Amino acid sequence: MSNKESSATINIHSNESTPLMGKSGSARSSQLVIDQQKKRELVGLSYMTLSALGFSTMSLFVKLSGTSFPSFEIVFARSVVQTFFSLIGCAMLKINPLGQPGVRKWLLLRGLAGTLGLCLFFYSITQLPLADATVVFFLGPAFTAILASLVLGEAFSLFDAVCSVSCMIGVTLVSKPQFLFGGGEPMEDDMDEWQRLFAIACALVGAMMSAVAYVTVRKIGRGAHFMVHVVYFGLVSAIVSPIGMFFFQTAVVPQGSYEYGMLLLVGLTAFIGQCFLNQGLQMAPAGPGTLMRMNDVVFAFLFGILILHEYPDIYSISGASIIVLMTSAMGIHKIYVHQKSKK
Image: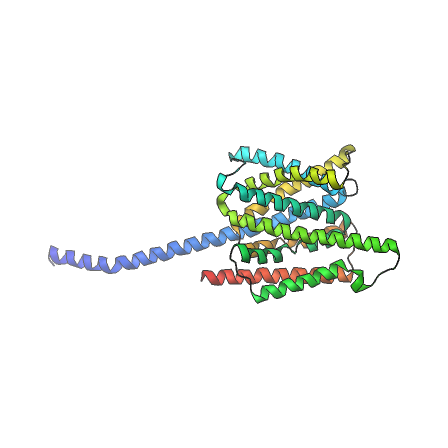
């Protein structure tokens, strides 16, 4: 075979094989990107689960502190500790704690919404059994799904709507209003009933505020480091909580190492939960991510029974089960839709 023929043969084989190699390499590259994305989402879901443990532990310390301090003071203590550690974290990571100018207004909104939700949630914890307050507050995923569909354009189907309505039935079972479930006639009982319903309403509005915070974090995306979110949340809380305490409550000076320790642990566990939460929200899809936070309900029931000796009745258990099942169903449905859209 001549050199010319040999060269032609090589070119023919080269021309036939090169496109195949290119397609194969492209397929491998595409699969690698998909695998990396899946790994990132799994890590994000793990972070969300750890955030649930951190926040449920925080709620336990809030409940224990609530016998000595008003709710706004507990929020203030948390915000001071959280801001301190987050600023140290930003310094260690060499991150600007104020974030990029383009996202600062969103960071402020996230901090304000989170602060209002936190204040309302802490108040409900001090007035209600830990499990009841936590269950109502964790209607947040349902509100997040609704808000995400309006702001982020995420799908909100008829299935999601049915689950959301079912969640409200669960709230009714947890709150047990006397005009539906009956109750005593004395005035004192009526006052206790209104206090309980007000605490339930605070937890409900707090859940709505948490939804605003979650969706804002998703909108910012990677535009801000998760530690910057923690800084803004802490700073805004440190400003808002003293104002609320001035108008609605009276500050109490801590006495002894136990009370100082409780307030410190509230802030420390909140800081840990915040770090995992913001990082998880940036890495995991909103639906599956908020689904992992439902572990907080499980932890709350365990802490309430094993540590606080708060034993829920059949209505609370039924309501909690409905809320957890429906929000879980919404999360699973969004996972299915998210994976289907990728295909």
